[in-house]
Amino acid sequence: MPNDYTLLNHFQPKNRLLRGRAYLRAKRITDLVVVIATLPLWLPLSALIYLIIRASAPDAFVIFVQKRTGKNGKRFLIYKFRTMVPNAEELKSKLAAVNGSGDLAGPLKLANDPRITRIGRFLRKTSLDELPQLVNILRGEMTLVGPRPTSWSPESYKLWQTERLDVLPGLTGLWQIYGRGGQDFDEWLRWDIRYLENQCLSLDFIIMIKTFTAVFKQRGAT
Image (cartoon, rainbow, N blue to C red; front, side, top):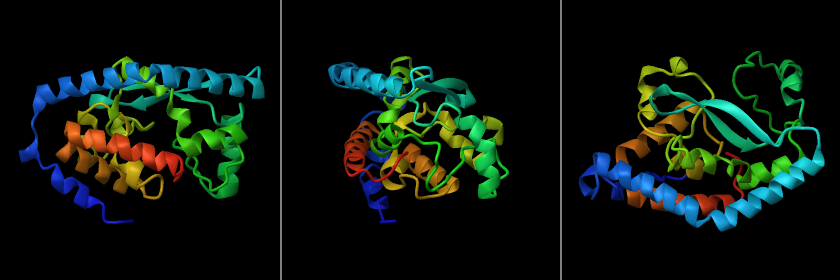
C-alpha cells in the first residue's frame, strides 16, 4: 500500500474553516446540491441498469435491501442494485462449507464468487451497484463522504471502533480510494478514524474526486 497519509497532513484540525455544526450543515447542503445537480446523469443511468437487471431475471428483485449500521448505531435500510443470482442466500451455506468458512453472519468473501452475475461483476467493478444509495443520501441516512456502513450490529464493535458511529455513514471514503477491498476490517476502520480526525469540506471534495479516479481505473469493488 502506498504511503497516502501525506494527503491528511494538509487537513489538520487547526486549518479547518468550518467546525462543528457549521461544518455539518455545509456538508448536508453539499450532499443535496451534488445529488440533485447530477440527477439528470444518475437517474437515466439507474433506469437503464434497472431494465438490464430486470431483463436478465424478470421474476427476481432488482434492488437489494439490507440493514446497515449508521450514525449512533442506528440501523437503517440501504439500497443497492442486485449483483448476485436470486438464490444467493440459499447458496451461501453450501459455498461457506466448501470454502471452509463457518461464519454465515457476515459477507462471504470468495475470489471468484459464482453467485455474482455477469452484469453484477461489471456493476461491482465500477461501483455502479451503489447508485441507489443516493436515495439514502437524500433521506439523510447517509452522506457522500464518510465511513461505509457495515451490516454488523453496533454491539459487535470493539470500543475503539465505535468512533466511526459518531457520524453519518458515507457513499465513499478514504478506504474506498486507498484500500478498495485489499485490507482487513481493522485497517479499514483505521482509515475511517483518520478521516474523522481530519474531516473538512476540502478533504471531502478531494475524496470525491479520487473516488471517480479509482472507479474509472476499475481498481476493484467496494
